[in-house]
Image (cartoon, rainbow over all chains, first blue to last red; front, top):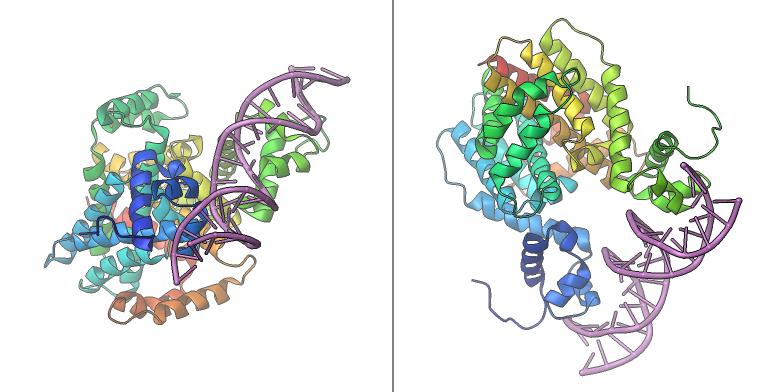
Length: 216
Length: 216
DNA sequence: ACCTGAACACCGTTCAAGT
DNA sequence: ACCTGAACACCGTTCAAGT
């Protein structure tokens, strides 16, 4: 849908190029020099269209989150809708792991506000008081950002393109090898870690919070 | 308890000095040059005691989290204990806002493992299945890290030493001024935001998750 | 064994100069 | 109005040289 070879720079082209670089080389790979080279221009030119790197990253996260939220199918039941919203954000972060770090670096930027608003509206439709709506939305968003950020950090730590199951196996082995005195719980959970699924575990956390909201 | 003028460097002295600088000047203030100057040595000397900046930050977070967890008073009732653990971590992050960012940059470092383990042991003492223990611990830790990170980011954004209530008032005014079509929920919540308390709101989120766990 | 500090290979950002 | 690219003021890290 984007024009193939529009002449000159633009915020849009910069955002698109930044996403390409971030996906290819991770957050460390996105420098204004690399971005300028990618766009066949000088580094200084970028500053004509964007105030700086923070603003660019905010624009990038705004775009991906907006797309993720647009993709959410409507649900008549609020808790279903919340689950769908959370799942869609999770999938965006899963597809672009660096997004987790970017999102939680500047909360209360438009991207996070969108998530908060969308979740909040669904809570509003539930039969709960305003205080629980506020606490519930805050808790859900904090949880979503927390998981996103952990995923981003894990991807940074792991070798790129490593197989998911071999990564989990290595991680579980680490847990199992922990000191028995200091980490009895983690040791006991190591087998469970090895066979857990990130996405459904994330959604199980959402369900836990939703169940807590229902209990009010 | 630390020796006043022990000769030479050491990991411990570096960690202590790093915390001082971070508290005074924020995360951006901690450079190896500044740290070396603070310790009256050359920048290269630091690398004799620490592999690099990441390791230093990990050691810093490890220390503060260990102190926070030691300060937790024992509770016979698991959900009380979990509340106390979460509150103690919250207070550490509140006292050292940059810690929130450091903690969630490298999860599954010792600091995070300690929190996970401590919370997990309490869940283990509750009458719940192992799957809920795993999901519950993950959810609680992700939430704690999420909130910590948001707080860190908020402090970065606000002017330093700004009064808490004036910050909240300004933030609430921003919410109230949002577009009515796009942000009805946030607008409706603006008054509540203005008078909410960070700490008790954080704990209300913990209670929500705990209530969800109980509902199993 | 431990420290020094200059040097290396980067950054984000600015800005005079161009078109 | 928009782009260029050298220059500025930084970084983390390395490493020969010192004690």
